[in-house]
Figure (tube, rainbow, N blue to C red):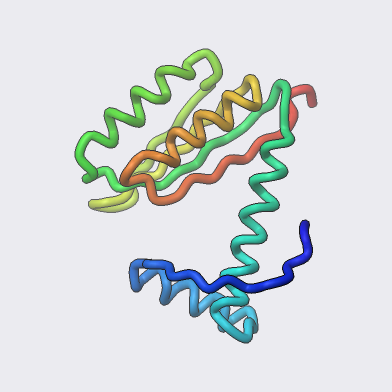
Length: 140
């Protein structure tokens, strides 16, 4: 990763509950400032993204995501997006967590680029709160 030379100040708007959780975590991990914790979080995100971008070929993967099922039309959008990748989806599980949140796991096997593409499309939908993509090579 490139050496960091100069700092740029930015402003970020976050829900207070998210910021409170983040602050609690960085205090528990001994960070000296919120900025230090944010820099580490961004570095980790970049490293994971760059690693995933290098993956190619046949892979087995899971896409797990949490979403607000009260978001109008989101359930239909998620179903529509998944139907475009039926040739790769092996199974999926849907769990109702509470009145607002649902959790889904999709297990896939196929081209790494298409698996990443599906994860990106899910991530871009309004009301999707968290997406995690995990892959391993399919030729194990």
